[in-house]
Length: 150
Image 1 (cartoon, rainbow, N blue to C red):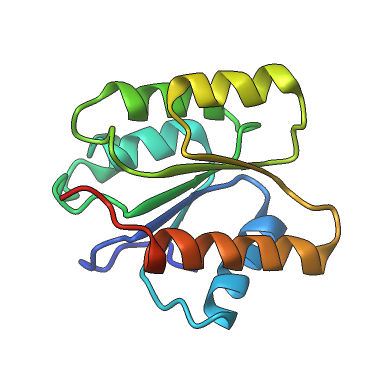
Image 2 (cartoon, rainbow, N blue to C red; image 1 turned 30 degrees about the vertical axis):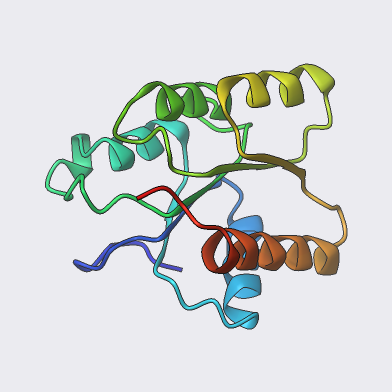
């Protein structure tokens, strides 16, 4: 799990405050042969700083935006819905696929996320193995099969 970009382009940005879920997500993607550069941020404020090259990430190249954002909703500092709103409201980040990966099955959350432009909404399976499989399938689709706009 990357804690620093080391000058490489980040292709998957995981916004997750639960260390166990983050580790499982990265391990599942690696286990399915996905070798894209991955980066973890642990709260919504850090996610926005990373995406918009501000704060601790002010020196990060804005052009090197992620190919995929996996976003939890229940986050410290700035919640996932606000992070999604800001991503989809900005021309620089609007076309980045954002997959909501959360434990919330609440219909208002699901509807609000789609209204704000989420590309997919996945409820985290409770079972460890099923969660890992869901994440690896997400990575395979969004990174290998999906054709993003140029």
